[in-house]
Length: 320
Ligand SMILES: [Zn+2]
Image (tube, rainbow, N blue to C red; front, side):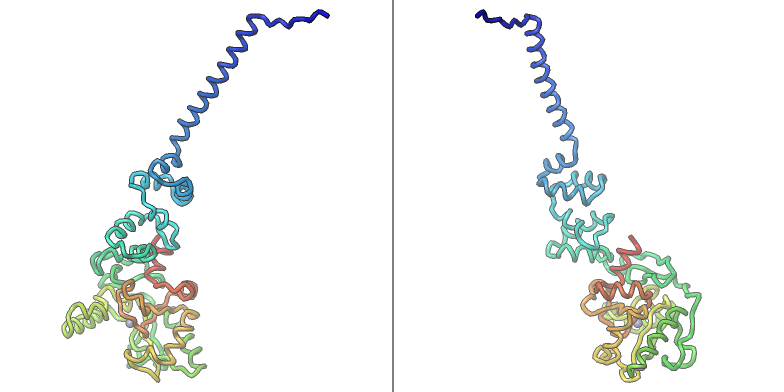
């Protein structure tokens, strides 16, 4: 049998070779192009900075592009994304967190967040920020200050059944008085007779209180127990010093039934313990078992459940 030879023309061969070569070139070009594109990605740039792929992924998930650009301008720093994973992280404060952490390496990241959020990277009274919110969410502390002529426009009198002093002496904003009277009635059903000892104080009153302590014991002592004028919550009209007919001393009120009841129940009426035990470095005040602040039920409940101070709450939920 005669075998039929398959003949491939010369032209076909050339075309075939050309196609193969072109294929290779296209493949190579695509690879180079892909690589070029990849090198433009944040993922690549982050891995070049020393972050692992997983860390890079994490950073891209946590931060805006603008923030990633900032992160790329710094040396590799694992704290950056660990800070962002913290519950109360505020992105606009990242630079301040990092600077504060560098000066205070012994602090946990949670502490860094807490302290910077409440301005503790500045000394108390170092910078005054005017309080502009006049509602029951206003903040007054050693950074936030009320003007000397600020007087709440809705002051009401606390009935003498639950207030010491001459009639009309104790005043607070109407919503504070209303909430307090509801709370006092509830406490009374359990045999506790709540009494307001001090409430709204104007700027001049606070000036007298502060100077009294300062003259007797010096500035440092005075700062721990009294606010400087303009920085007192009592000027806001939303703060009450509460005792009971059974317990009338600042020294022992924390051991009283009335305090135990308030600690457990005051949030239900919109009040919080404003200067809690163990939070002195945040609030700037020694523990005050008698000082209550009206913030409304919703905020008070959050603060009770999450065991944070109003300063922290304000920074994260209101100021941010
Ligand atoms: Zn007070």
